[in-house]
Length: 251
Image (cartoon, rainbow, N blue to C red; front, top):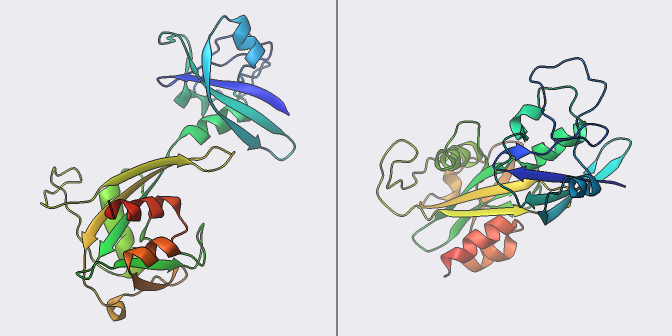
């Protein structure tokens, strides 16, 4: 398996040509592939440049005909003005697919959830009928849309998945409107697999005494909804983010 080194410093990425010469910079909008592909350097090539770095993790990236190990590292240098902006690799066809895929892995996938608690201290959960957690109980929520505040995403997802209207406190008006109260904001980050997809999760808290009869699960996405005690909600949760958010209520 080929091995490469991904060094990023404040949005700047070290790239080399096919002969290991660098730093190289992509050309925005280049369509015709250059003779020398722009790629990630090897550990040896970085050593030859005299750059010291610290390892953070490894990602395994699979393509149809080959796979590569990409070591993610932090360079021990001042800000590298002559390195490439990581955002510039997308629109140059001379940039190796491995570079683009490596950058893609560093982008946060943002999800937003909400703990809906009734006056008996029970938590509302939804049983998914598709997606990552098909057949499992989860907190209402999902992916944050482009340009959307995570708080508004949680409100939208509760409406889409369960057909219910909720409000979440916003003491600072971060999402547009001031609303006093405790939003229970709980932020988590994790990388769960060797493929290196980076997840960022926001979980909020609100109160509702809606009955199950008044909940309308989204067809094809949510099988049913149910109120759980905190202990049973924790026991039935399969998402690490959900578990840690529910556990935070008990502290």
